[in-house]
Structure formats: structure tokens, C-alpha cells
Length: 387
Image 1 (tube, helix red, strand yellow):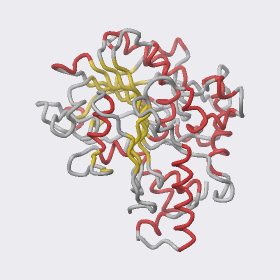
Image 2 (cartoon, rainbow, N blue to C red):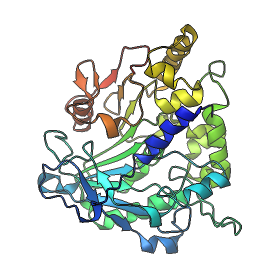
Image 3 (cartoon, rainbow, N blue to C red):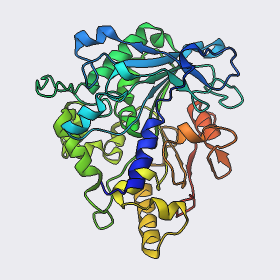
């Protein structure tokens, strides 16, 4: 990946935002349903260890859950956390001593004012649902599955088993009796939300409404003439090789192309039968940095060169050409906004700071699509990033 110090710092910040800890967190309680930020303690799945479902360091997986209330008590939102990937043993060893590789280091999770908000005005369709954040501690987006453990490193690559263990536990806690279900993934968590979308649906045969949402993870394999460096394909090949992810990928895709290419949503979304909604920017910070290089300062300062503008416009056109087909918006919705950012749900699911396309907010567009009120497939007309 081509990156300068500033770009690396940005990515570190994006990952770090997933887990926020305050000194008062353990004692802070949600005292009213209008309270918009609150901390939730982790639920550790100790019995998952016997099934081989463990974090990078061998510790049991974990998730954070806030129970729904009133009419939302039988609706569930399962959010797969993001936070990059570890592509080699050294990166994975470094992660294994952090919340992204070990449940031993996971602090209470701050359910902030976005899709986790319990404020009806800020989050009208989801505010009173059961909300679950699945902690990300395997380094490969819940897809790895290697049986052996290298005694030299003591690293475990078992992300796919973590997803299964968490789902089994949640089903026993009421998920199997829900009326509405939503599987969400942001950043590195977006791909497994797409990958496991149909599997999630099959776990809930009696649930009337089941849909999936990917946020800021529809990374594309760009034209080699445009791409600077080796890009995502090299990253995904390293992930598949180290973590044994090929077993988790759909055979409908891997029978046609190399496993690493099946990490690209553009190559496997057509196999998904469950309704899927995509939130993405053509100028996502991670996509731009990986595919084009360090454009960060130029975009933030609105000072791109003519060549940079040309490359950015080409990148936008490539993303639009590789999105799900818009002919059936009931099964494939989209909200494509041109802001230079990452993780839309975390930062722009707020009435005072919400993303808008064609005078429709992201909150309304997704809510209407999920509840079959209106089917939105919205694309920002801006052909250059909005800083």
C-alpha cells in the first residue's frame, strides 16, 4: 500500500475509533432512552473456545449487546466491527496484544449517536432495537479458518468460527424469535456482512424481514493503468494465504477465479439472494489511498492537480460501473456519496451531520428501503471528492 505518514495516521485513527474507552465507563449507565451515548460491557463467549472459535491470541471472542425495548424488543441489528486486516505474521502478532486481536484487551464499547443511537429523533427506525456489536479480533474480517496453530507464534486464524459462535449464542438469546433482522458491516466488517448475508437469512427461517447493509467496504479492483502500487489484490492474496480464508468464500465465485479476487464485492455480490444495501463513497479514504496513493492533503486542502482530478474521476466511474445492478432496487439499494471520508454510519448517521444525496438523507433512504416504504438507489452527482 502506498502511504505517507499522514495517511497511515488517518487509518490508525479510523481503526481506533471502533473502541472508545473513558475513565468513567464501567460505572456509567444508560438512565433514559433519550440518552445518546452510553457504554456497554463485553460479553465473552467462553464456551466458544472448545469449538476452536478464538481471537488471534487464543482468547475467546466477544460482543457488546444492548437490549431492545417496547416495539423494538423483537428486532435485531447485528453489526460486524471493522478495523483493517493483518497480512503477515508480524502484523498479526502486533494486533494480538490489542482489542483487535484479543478479548483480554477489549474495553467497554461506547454506543455512540449513530445507528446505535437510542434517541428516536436521531434514529427513528432502529432506536429501540436489540443492538449488537461483534468485536473484531481475528484480523481477516471473520473469514479465516486454519486448524493448526504455529507453536512459534501461537497465533490462531479462526475468524469464520467466531462468526458462527456469536450467531449461535445470539439465537439462544432471542434472535431466533425476531420480527426484523439486519446484518451490518463497516469497513473491514462490510465484506463479511455481504459474505454471510444469505447464511444469516437461513438462520432465521421464521423472520418476516431480513436484510443486510455494507458501509464503506465496497472496495473495487481498479484498472491497472489507474492503480498505483499493487493495491487490494495483493492485500487479499496475503490474507487468503495466511488465514486460510478460501474455505469461507462462496464456491460459486472461487470456482471461477482466484480466491483473492472473491474478496472483491464486485465479484460475488451477484450470488447473494438476500436484499442488500450499499453505502459507499467513490472517494473513500482507504480506497483512494490504496488505489491511487497519498492524495490526502491535496483533497483535504482542495488543491488537487489536473492529473489527480483525472484519476479521481476515473476512480468514481469505475466504482459506479461495479456496483450492484440498479434495475431491482427492492433487492439492491445504494447510497453513494462523494465525501472524502470513511465509515459513514459512525460519523454521518446524525440529523445535525447527516449525509444527503438528492435531498434525501442517509437515515431516511435506508430506513425507507429496509421497511419497504420506498426503494432508494441514490448516487451523488459530484465527480470530485467533497473534502
